[in-house]
Length: 282
Image (cartoon, rainbow, N blue to C red; front, top):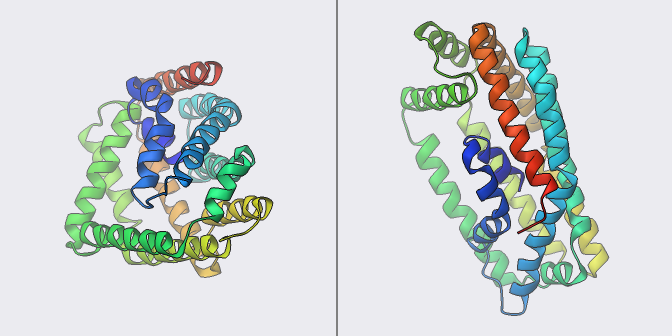
């Protein structure tokens, strides 16, 4: 749900439509990884509805508050430390998602416990396919091509917030990105570790009682937000700090008009999310 929500912020006009259908999108994604039995399907579909309702009720108001603070922040100067402080708030929101497990009823928990060896093997095969796609897109390409694509994505995201960037601002962004290269190999290694931990956690919950499953899922979600290996955790933190410097460098190059545009964009996002938080599920 968090990934879906953050992705939606790239296009304000689609937020309401997509968020109101987030449980269906989540179900589509989930069933791409595991084929549920006829007994499991109703409980797992209802689980998506329960999590979506929890997210609307418990998380959206916090996002609205966060966007409100960002509006004040982008009007002034932002250093790397300030950007990281804002990023830390987002990370905390993501870590809080483990609370969604409390919204699951006994039927959903029993469905998780009933996942069998064949289904978990299917999950591993789908993970392997996803990893192949990752390697083809990020590892099996020339470094310059990857850097160019990374720059294009950064420009697109920046212009979504600030409006059109000037050539000199693009140079600032390119320079900042080149000073903080993304290590695709290290990212891939951390990705594989998380996938393996997921399967191991689900295997440990097979045939477990409902409340044990609830506790296990909460632990699993909490761990998915933080690298278990100290070295991986340090690398992730270093990468985040580097990106804070990139964002700060770009922001320092923006004009008063661009910052005003950023405030208006964030206001629009907050307004959309406030409406969603106050409206009943559809």
